[in-house]
Image (tube, rainbow, N blue to C red; front, side):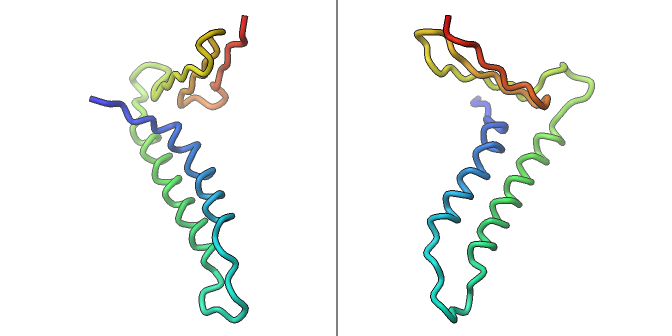
Length: 97
């Protein structure tokens, strides 16, 4: 069974949303729906909130200290990697040696 990278999704959704909003065409003057960028941004915000809520609800307080752990290798030649956990401020990078 594949593990869903919830933390990466929660970090990536606002970035994708900002790119989508930036690429929306500028509405014509007097267009009936000039609030499309606001609606799209709000939609991405709601989806992000839902993902973060799922992570929060899925956190087991009686379980291990670090949950929803993700490890991503960036550069294998110098063993550079990132580790993300649900705990705030826990994005760690190991420098190339």
